[in-house]
Image 1 (cartoon, rainbow, N blue to C red):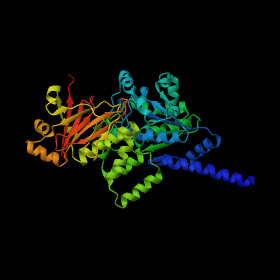
Image 2: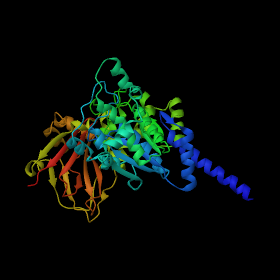
Image 3: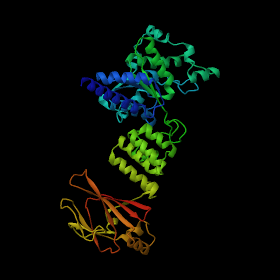
Image 4: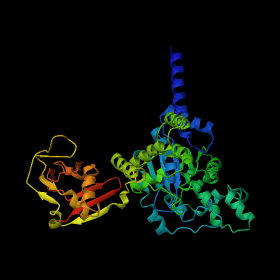
Length: 469
């Protein structure tokens, strides 16, 4: 019986480990080495000890964009399995400058630039990472205290020949372009971070592979268990070609306004959409596989992109903002109502009363749809008014004549919207009134309303604001 129990427990543990590996590997470019990852996870599951997952971010700009979040999302995956993330802000190494991908020596950042750029990193990172499973560290805390004799000992474990194996260095050496000595130091210091922290796993973009390997090999040289390396693909930006970058203007920032963020995601190509799902979405592998099958069967890519845009905006804001952003997009690009081109019109009390006749308070109103008047709560302040819709449309140039205005109203093409607030001012609902061709029919509008949206047909929208007087 005990033997059967042991077999069952072993299978359960094996299932947990394989489940972690499957989730961890999703979307990754390379894993060095999977058997070592299995051993580390096996030890972690058996002893209920979380692994140390390291990722470094040089604060070369103050904003994090979705390209950065590829790593953050993967770190979040590790956290879901109980592991601890070491989020390293490379304030010290940023002052040296990472040579990766550079065809010439990069100008190092000043200490002031680094501090300024790293100020918002923590807040932005916690939009994705779990604070209770995250340690945010600045590598200046240990690198600034590294003694010269200690650094010489570290650097003695790497040769110039090995450094020249780095693609960027090799190309520049062959082209007889300068390579400054401090550029050799950068990978060593990044590697020392791993040695100092005794990282179990380090994650980076696939352009960081050389630097990650330096850390792995330094750990071997100093007798530490080497870190497993996982590289992630670089996320192409909105142009679909180049790495997402603020300097190229092809980025989607995590601090972009909801409407802008939603619209940018909707602008990615159909070909790039699945890669964005793999690297940015939190849907399960099973859901992703199902989505791919549905697309192959002819599902409209716009539906799939809208789902992704909704998910991402909701992640960085909330469900309400995401829903509003979706409606904004639909109005502007699908219904062609051009919300950006809403005409804003301001009335003072005297001019407004030319089109609105107040005829006293009432406990109900006619909304243009219900056969009977709709009851207001007695707690909601309201006034019964008649609206001379035709004159109003002509006055604001929404119609060229009274005849055209009356025709639009008769066709139910003129709608007035206002917000109706409950007793709690934070809660509101939008009321829609279809103007009736009979201007003598009264409508009930809250007396404290001072802003209305007037929609005429499908494309004309006017925001009417009332001055306090």
